[in-house]
Amino acid sequence: MESIWRLLKQRLKNRGFITHPTELRQAIEEEWNKITLEEINTAIATMPERVAALNERNGLPIPF
Image (cartoon, rainbow, N blue to C red; front, side, top):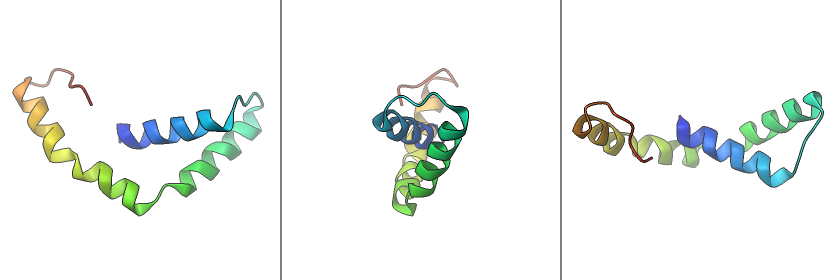
C-alpha cells in the first residue's frame, strides 16, 4: 500500500501547490482514479520480496 500512497503523493506534488481543501480533495480523487491496474499489480508483485525482507529483519523497518 505504501507504494501506491507514494505514487499518489508524487502525482499530487507534480500538480503544484494546492491550498484550498476542496481543490485538494478533488485532486486526490482525480489522481486516485488514474491509478492503473498495472500499477496496483506491480505493487502487489513486490510483496513476497518485502515479506522476506521483514522476516530477515525480524519485523524491523525495511528499505522499501
